[in-house]
Length: 266
Image (tube, rainbow, N blue to C red; front, side):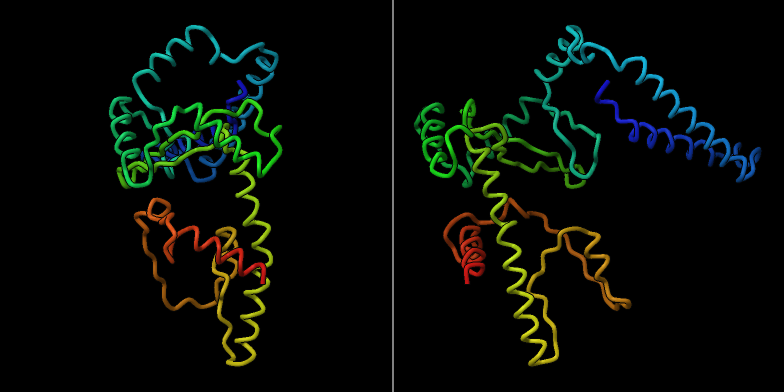
């Protein structure tokens, strides 16, 4: 019941109505105004029926997904298939043979991005917990002993998988939250520094360079487009997050973060 997304259902049914109203028969029998009226009446009825459904079932004691028969079907399905999200396709799960995905996972874990350890998982988790408590209070890590797990997203447009090491609900989840907040706090000072350097170049050479290239949203990009655009260049990065080196090289992630922090502290 709570999982029913009214707006999504209405949007899907509206697409169905649009397809029906563009058929040859509807074009012959209905005018544009009549098609608009039919669509409005149908959508009003759909919203009314969804609201009535909500009212009838708003006091149910449990979700239907917790029904014993439903749980058996889900367990049978997930025991044979991995159900993962599809990149750039919301509300579209991907079903992959569980033996096939395990083979790909082992290949991923055997690659250069992972180092095999001889310790037992509980000992590794305890060691990570001891290190994590140096960043935050131990109370943040209560009942969070599992290690991060490997998850995947299917990229249907590239027929490949994107692998992600997910720390959610693990011993490192609170540390990941801290690391996520730090760049946001530092970004304000970095933006101010970039703006001052840009103003300095503008004053000396009458050219304003953009030292701060990240944007917060697509709307910000659109809002800052010039009135006249004379050339457009687009490219596709086939490997983005997977290709960032995590070693101590000049172009590695650690060196970039170190430069980011040092620039802020100037």
